[in-house]
Image (cartoon, rainbow, N blue to C red; front, side, top):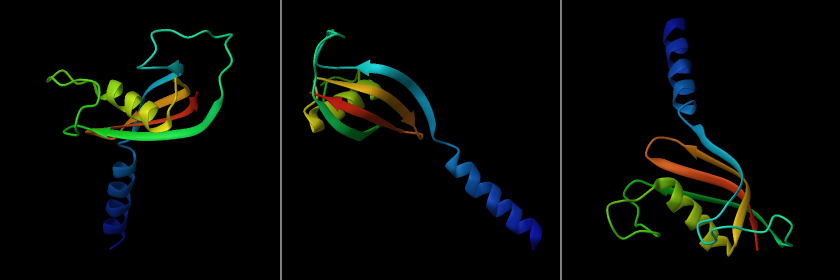
Length: 104
């Protein structure tokens, strides 16, 4: 019985451990090629988004869809941000998640 509890606990932990960081960057944008680091931007608050394999593409209409590109653009469009700062992009299998701060 004790061995079964240990195996059950390990399987639960293994399921949680499948999420990992892919990319951490200070700023990113899919709508602006560059930005003025000395510029003034309004803090739009925290933003999160998720894009999964098989979701409708936002940035591309062909078979060349980058999951990170899609999740960044989804977060920007959802928040109205010019760019995102303090960005962390994570994967949990076939989905990519983003946590960032929107800058308007």
